[in-house]
Image 1 (cartoon, rainbow, N blue to C red):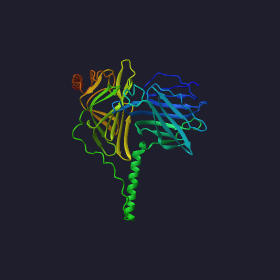
Image 2 (tube, rainbow, N blue to C red):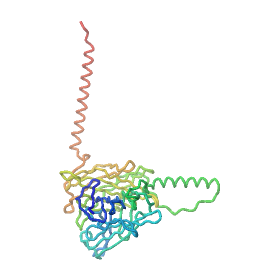
Image 3 (cartoon, rainbow, N blue to C red):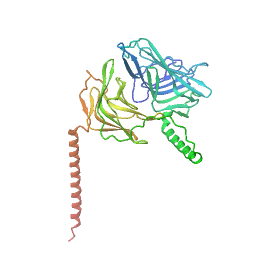
Image 4 (cartoon, helix red, strand yellow):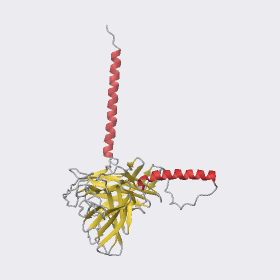
Length: 433
């Protein structure tokens, strides 16, 4: 039957008509999919964001990494609600024989999916210098743990799935298979990362209570725990971070440039201020005509900067999304994300520059301090920055008239107030003759 299509979110892409066993409602950039059977009953609902990173060997016996988000042009021909022997399956195909498939199976009162990702190194656009040609398939369980039937799996944090040379980052997930009568459940199974703070607090309370009880009743010492990761630094750096230069390439052509000093400021739980070291920071991500992603990773800290082109008459871009991940310990990860930002606005084809320190408020407990910024996420030519559009903080020619104008306005208001007061006093002095 004909597929019904709907678009959600901030980015609009061309519509297409699909012919499937059932119908599919979908969005690209973020998957937002309902797979339906011939009776128009939903058997699988999946909404999620996916980043894929692939490490491959080149003809020069070196290794490169290509990273991308799922493109806008997707095919869903293999999606099905299954039958008596197999469960529902969402099959996404794109490009030159690449596919991303998640199939589900149930057992007793739980269900779980398996992601099977196949990529083709014959694709000269993604793998222009691959040494080994052909199809490569990797698979992994998702969700990481089985989910109870009649519940929705939810995870706003980034979950990382590694299979051989492929790393998949999945977040903003709302997922349910085997829907009862086609209706999505109102009961959630939340991923561990989303409740890590609560779990850590509860675990600490339990450990404290056990320690007090043990001290009161028995001298027996608790078992020695595994050595933890070294603690994250808690001292506030006196100096601002060093400035680093980063770039991304598409088919050996530079497609994104960024120069900045990056400082992470966390006020949640124990306050942390962490400087990114340009000598150890690794840049990755992807370039696109509408969306570009720059990921900076330093040790246990990672920040994703997502740039998007605005839907306006004159094409402009801005920083619309930031994701922060900090591995605090073996069992605790700090996450913060904001997908409705509007920073660093400039015309497509130009760069954005701000020499003064800027503070980006991601969430109430997470901020980024940016120093000596210059960035161009689209239309980079000859590995060079285009003419920069400067931030207001740098533009003294704008700030000085504003300050002077404000001072003059205040002076005029004071004169008017003094005049009115003086007039009232003069009237009060007259007597009738």
